[in-house]
Image (cartoon, rainbow, N blue to C red; front, side):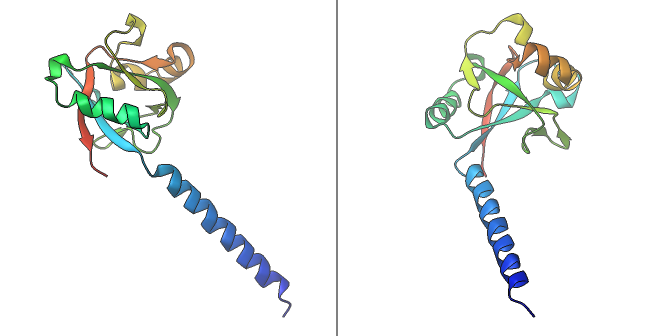
Length: 149
């Protein structure tokens, strides 16, 4: 039997393993946070979302929020991206969107158009939020906790 097909198999396997290693490397270094919403949420899916970052300065700022009383924590504002990113969930519900990991921030105030609820507003009309509003920054949002991974 010729060795050529065996070489192709080895090359394909090597490429596949390398690609998987690069995907895993992209996931390393991320810190995940649960964002809570200090409001009367009639729908349980509006009570929390998950964000992540690998930016050291942002991690430091988000961790510092946890030392503050909830009423003094800043608003979480981010650019919206399609899909859950594989992590933006609340219990069994996987959101149709997530924050761009490199652009979300903590702010003191946002414009009214960015205010809303994660499920009732953003998930229920994702096309509008992704295509028109492009950001989400609920006035009631805050960093609730760091999620161990």
